[in-house]
Amino acid sequence: MLHNHYKEKINLNVIYLICLLLLTFYGFYKNGLNYYFDNQITFLEALKPLEISLSGLFVGLIVDMLIYHKLANNYLLGFLISVSLPYQISVIISTIIIGIILFIFSKFKITFSPIYLIIIILIFIVNNNYANIIENNNQIFYKTIDIFLGKNIGGVAITNILLLIISLIFLCTSFYYKKEIALITLVTYLGLTFFGSIINDDANLFINLLNSSVFYNSIFLIPFNNYSPINKKNQIFYALFSGICIFIGKNSISGVFLAAFISNTIFYLIDILSKKRTFIA
Image (cartoon, rainbow, N blue to C red; front, side, top):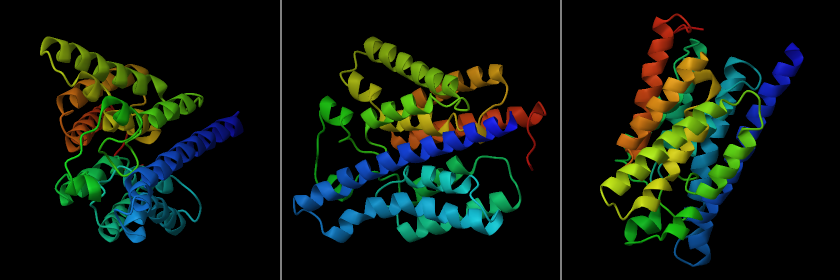
């Protein structure tokens, strides 16, 4: 029985990895190759989204080997962080910060999530600028269909709503994926956004609904096993609260991450105070 549980957890990590690789290569095309083929940027500039995305994966692998001498969770944590980052970030700076914090958290067995902590630090280092090199230099307007197909502004690998929905479907096939958290968070956000837009007669309803940062947080980060509530009742409240917080912060990409960080931190403290979790593993 224990062997089957171990296989299921490995299976979930593999699905996470495959989905993140798909998002990474799409982000590489959307933010890099697409403009290179149009002769708008150099090949080295086109490589940057790929470099940013994969840097977290490789630095996480290094931390795993240094601390555990085998694959643990850091390679996945590093990957989740790096695909979330703004295009304008320095690869060297992001790699150093991700590596140092992951190493400290692993070395001292700190159970608090390093994911949001690192993302928030790195987002504010680059002044919240999520536009790629072309979007930053030109006034670009994306239609609803463009946004659905992945042409909106976002993290280097989290602009494609369609791929995010496909990722959710694949993740839901794993027993250990906390699908209830992901679905309740999304439904809460979408419901509040829909009714809020109707009440305020907001013309940007579909653009607000198709917020890739919201989908990414709800599908990949908020339900992440190690850093979400263990108790089923707490999971429901956590998901509802996350959806509400994200709705409040939806007007900017950094606001979405900050809202999810607040929700994640509050429920981590609730688990600590209710003695369902300890600060040091």
